[in-house]
Length: 71
Image (tube, one colour):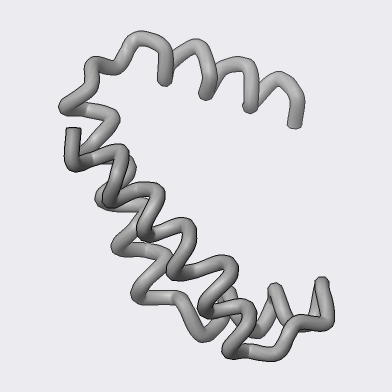
């Protein structure tokens, strides 16, 4: 796993800001499309209620991506 992360990081450092924005948009799209499943796993893992997982994980992450991409 460590090797994969190193390769991914190395590749990521070669991307420009526009390419990074595209990647983040695709990550955000995936998060939104799979929000229920992500919240279910988060709830099982942390004991959060589904609403807390939605507010604390999904919305927070999407907002961070939105702020990064607004530059």
